[in-house]
Length: 294
Image 1 (tube, rainbow, N blue to C red):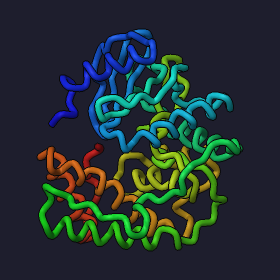
Image 2 (cartoon, rainbow, N blue to C red; image 1 turned 120 degrees about the horizontal axis):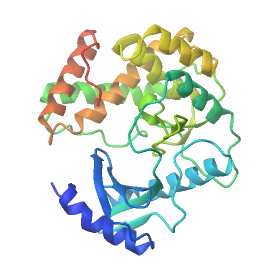
Image 3 (cartoon, rainbow, N blue to C red; image 1 turned 90 degrees about the horizontal axis):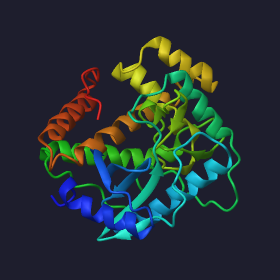
Image 4 (cartoon, rainbow, N blue to C red; image 1 turned 120 degrees about the vertical axis):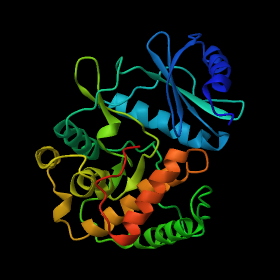
């Protein structure tokens, strides 16, 4: 696979030079949907694997600058001309938040999501409509690396989610959403203050989507305990689990989580095993307590 550290380092060095940073890549932080490198000078670079993601990168920079102007604690885009499209990938540059990733307490997560939802959106920022399962007519994933029956079942559940999601009985006022709000996307800076990261999925739609992962992680997966979840609910001011559409939205979020890992099955044996385990649990109503955190 070409999307690896050895191939990306020289591309990143050229992109940094192009915007006048000139900081060499110091270390690879991770490679997932994006590759993330720490550079010198307190800069972090994110590399998206396709030029098709250029518009999304532009939107991330726009969102980051809006949040900075609003003095909201989110990841800050470096003040250079960006994003940079180079050799078929897209590079963005961000101010480093901390020397290590420490996740914020759930009370802080709840407060940040509440504060985000309360912000007025500037008229000059255009965000897409929230469509977590794609639009009608979009092709469904092939899921290479998954058992054929599992792949077919997962595609059927995506199709169901795509049709059913807009008709859920949402009650919270719609507006801008982070799109992937969970504890993994709120980290502490070096002073311990919480900061929202990963702006890839910003959109406009049901606010319930920004609450479902925390509820699901507590209720079905056991990744949060009851005290942590109550801290989140108190901080945000609303308990999604008391909403009539909670069960259906939780089912859909499980599909989204499983889809993400299933797309990696072709290149990762671990992802293939995890995806198969998740599909089996969804199909049979089995426990989710052994799902791995990816």
